[in-house]
Image 1: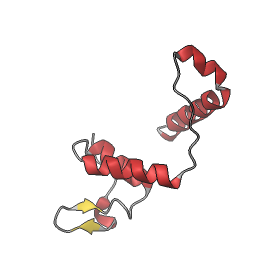
Image 2: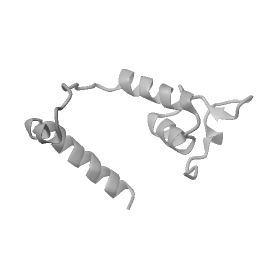
Image 3: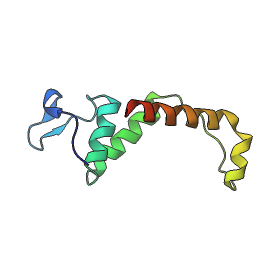
Image 4: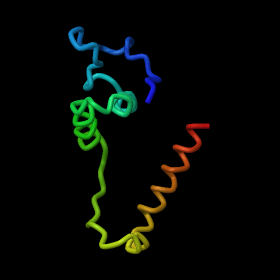
Length: 90
């Protein structure tokens, strides 16, 4: 995947030329780890930041996909997010 974000504008570690994962936005960090799949630290920092910065709703594990019908709010959120992703790529 090609880098679309110029990390030269963000604070970088001069020894590794990596952005400071704690100073860039979540969107930038996500873009970085998606384009640098070998960088496990970026992924772990992203997951930690997402879990600490956003309100999370947890649900019990599903026994099968048919049980998704019991969670219409989750289905609606997934549909909204999918539409947002599609529209943002246009």
